[in-house]
Image: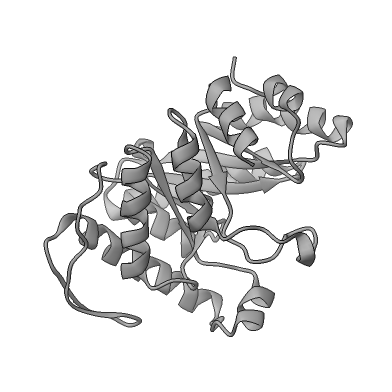
Length: 261
């Protein structure tokens, strides 16, 4: 993993990210490391590249603790953290760990409240908050982040609620493109919906960066080439940022072949 991070750092990639899961997505016994602990190691092992978790499950950690964790990694990295947050989706992980998994609407409401709380903790000396999910009394988060503000990325594709939270709170929206052949068309449709939400909340839609995740299987060259051909289509539809998700660790040669030119 450290070799992968250092290779990406040296090849000129914009960022390298973890994911927030206790089990592997392809196989439950893939045994990933915990996301935020490994982010601290990633911060220390690299020098230029931005780092982050794409995306943190809002159900797994109290927002005040998460705010403090993010500040710590932001300092270790010298101000290179991108803060990713999402409403969570893997019900099996929640049930296995005894973590409540409420309805999608409730999780999105948690996401919105967490966004407000975390931003306040990063910017205010003390925070008092009585919300639907969390209560804070004189809460402090010091030191403050090196970045003011830490860029916030929200992932998801919910048209009515998730994209509204993006419009109100995110610097970047991450579209889960995965391995969808019709991904560019879906992205364009959702991006237009996001524009509408921005207009409703009085925000310039151009201030929300648009990104897409593409799944690459290192052992399947045809699949990689098919995915890479989609990049131009995403760019034509307004994508600013493409994130490759490797289903298994890529070789140095593969990483170099998809590096930015």
